[in-house]
View 1 (cartoon, rainbow, N blue to C red):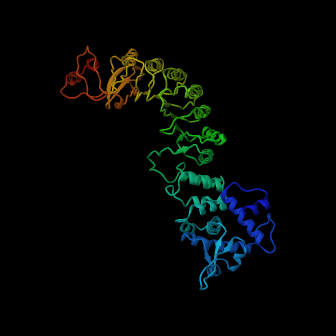
View 2: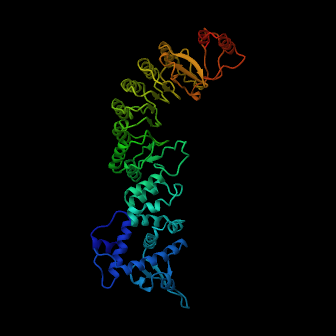
View 3: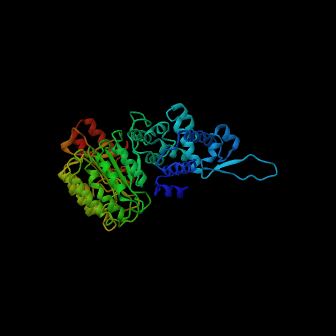
Length: 508
């Protein structure tokens, strides 16, 4: 079948549905009397016989069989003449008694294609199409998408997002073509457009984009479409070996030109190393993402299993610093979970001094020691932030725990009053107050706004160690409220009842 097609056309289609379609047409044209040239269409009476046989083939495939009796073909399969079209072979029967002749297609893909060919005749009837699509094999749907082309949205609108995974949806889109109706239907299925999803007052989850060529091509089509209303997107960066880099370039170009996406999260695959070549490719696209229109939040989460992986991410940090100098004016929140070194944290803070639109900085899981923390403190001194998150940070192994302010003991406790970071923060006239079971640092310039300047996760912080000069008892957990009955609680309560705001601040 493929040899005949190549002999007549001189080439073979790359898509499976297009290949089977061209092969079946080639066989049918050769089997007619007289044969029809390759460039001409199949006669109308032959197309009607193919539709009738496709209906019989669809019923047989639902029963997991791929053979047809002569009586079945005469009654409902287009007549015995359909056996002369070249795609059916007579099966062998053994036994003393004469058994009915059985006919089988030369390949299962031919039966699936002709079943899809029948469904194209009822595609405009929504009720019939909905009934026929129930329990339909995936091979028939792909052939049906290739036959309908721009009208494939008639099928996609009948599907539920829970029935087909995103990769199967993008496969149908590739076979059908990127028409406006098809892309709008795909947006609904993958959660990038109005349709199925959470309640209107709930924020939909960010879809996951895997960097395979099929998904990158499909998501690029979606991001370029005006039907896309997606607000958040997460990219799992793991490039397939030997894949064409143009798919990745086209995706990030479409993402940079999209105006609906306001949150971009780029992550690495958990439990696997981030190789140097992927870091180079990621660095080449950071500038376009940071300069994206209406970008409010940018998150970069790269998991490194090795502790000495700072050199591997050097190109990413360099691209990040260059991108921050030309970042979007609406970028207000930056999350960098990369286990940066002290020198890399210093360079990021230096770049943030000129990026005044960023008001929330999250640097979790730092192991940089006092050098990086001092850079963060200097950044707060020159340009106060509305929010700073250092959750899960720990000190460097070659440093004294008291120098960085973060202990390397088993309980991961933080000595607040001996920490060099806290001493730097206290010089900037920050005031301590308890709010919602978290330690908040309030800058005098933002009394009315009441911003949260520092959140340190309770998981990485053991207890609040009071200064030896105060003589107060130690709280059970850092950031928790004082317990009744303690000396600290009594003094704080007395100060609050007295109405003396200054005395309460001194006691706290």
